[in-house]
Image 1: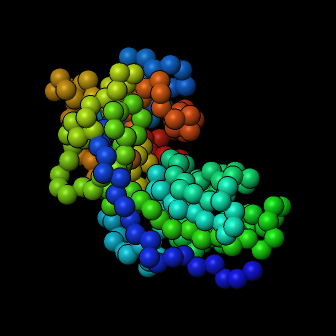
Image 2: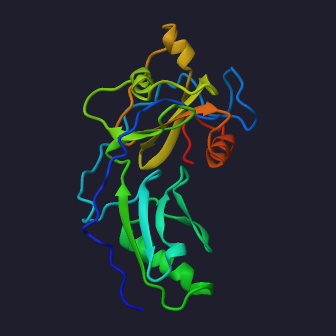
Length: 240
């Protein structure tokens, strides 16, 4: 097996879509009320860890919701663009979910090579590149009209993010919203109620580059519901 290297020529392409707010906190259909295990009105939900800006070709670590371009030589059915999910895993044909977050592309190359070699391929030739990165942008997903991510060029609040997203979709629940953020080296989450924010009953929180904002709704991804339904309730912030 030849040594796997990550192609340095691949660069980040921002998914210039909008930013919104939110999170699915319960497993059932969307209900117009607060709920779930992510805490509301969190006084200690402060600024995230300071970003470390490094070129992608110099040890960039994969983040949740990054889009990866993965190629398996002479195996087009195993190759393509794959999104890292909110748990940090990438779902691959044959081998299923593989942990990708916080790995370099070279490390993921090696991990995928080992996984494919275990049962399916002899001496597979795998290469991984980052097609779109979320570390330098704010990402929105869930019940919004234009899910995606975009660069943060100045101060931005949750309400402004919703406006930039083009607003919530028809199935959205403005009262169940979450921001996922890296604090102290761990992924953390806190819940917000956009209805209260609009009425001036709650503060409009700041969002930062690297945040993932998800808004609840009946059409959100299954993996998001699974993650949010299983967040522990033992403390204000818990890694997931």
